Length: 430
Image 1 (cartoon, one colour):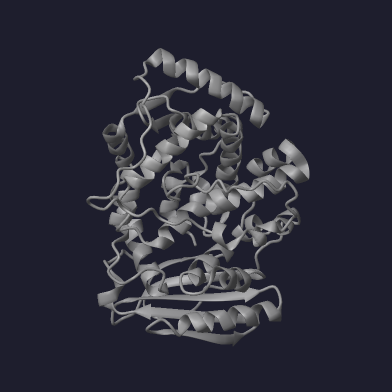
Image 2: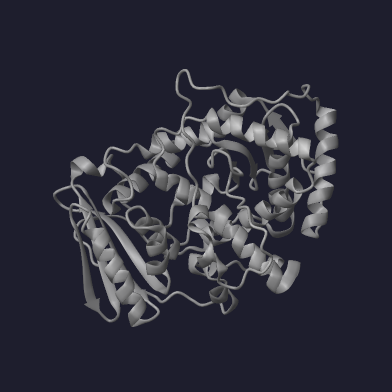
């Protein structure tokens, strides 16, 4: 799904979302023999994050560790130099220039992050809220603007901005968890110096290249970050785990719908698996080439064999609509998985979406108000189309006003509408 606002969180570290696992889905995998399509074989319990439970009044306090002494600028520079050397060795590239790292305490960091949360972001989120509501991916009355703003303020550990070169981390102390975040963001800074991560032209396209590129970027950073974690002593790892647990337990995610976690985590989780396979296939040269010419569909991220042959999506015409157009773009295999997974099992959603060929969606406001989303989709084979249609029909039966039609030419048409009351706030048409 072409979430334009996703670019604003594309290069941050989302923390505490597992409530005890590594923050942004560094899965615990020790098998070095992943085959080309092993993304399909990730165990069900590893398929997505479980939001942490907010701390209740009177509940036991989170585990604590002895905090180190406050740091000064000289200590930060020395640590960044050491971590930069690690990142260079792991990535096989050298920094063209040093990276300045700013470490801010919680309040100052949250204020810095929320500077990016402007009126344009709020408008995009309001539109996304209407689309998700019409598709049944969030409950009526969900305030997506508030939910994302909450994640911005509480759920981000650090960010690197490729447009300005800023690298800012939440902390104020050089703990193992802060150093881990610095490593992750230094990977982005290094890749940016060599391959230019700021690509606004991708955001202007109606396909999935922005989401697919993001998966490459984040997957590479997660892998190198995990390599750094593996170098920690037992005591350092214990301190890192305690700090992570403390951060997770102090987060309030009561207003955040589960689908938002799934969307934000996907580039880290799926990107890591994709880059692992890429490195096994062709080493650093293949990874570098994927930065230069990234995959342009999420199908290629999810199915490595599709990337190897650069299988293109099948062109699908814009579906007809009756009303005021709000948005239109490619939907994509990842979006089908995410949508179906909100009401069907993860295994069913994954299987039904596999074999994706191409699609196009429109979001529009009918004359009587509300919001409708219509998606025309084709699959690789008739059997794939039948499987998606069967799952989609069961999904539609749980929605107030949704239909699934075979419109011929190998196309299924899914349409779902909600009235004005359930539709959320207004959004400006294109």
